[in-house]
Length: 104
Image (cartoon, rainbow, N blue to C red; front, side):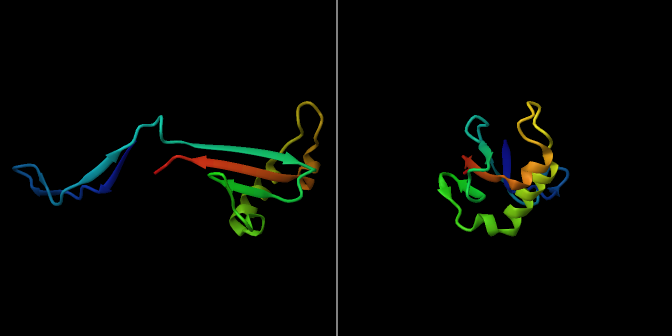
């Protein structure tokens, strides 16, 4: 992955093919650049919770952004294929999400 810190904005001189400004970019190894996210749902969980890089985000269950995500997933959830959970039961579950990000 290559991220441009100062982007190319055109040519200063077409004849010499020189840019208007210098550019700087960083190339990152994809083996080191990742986010790993897990989610679990259970009736035994007391509330929805979120951990980012091992630290619990206090108040996440009241956050509008987090609520929109979790409530949206619950609304889209379907019956489990093994029959252990029906679509209308998802609203009664609490969700625990843990995400670890190695992006610098």
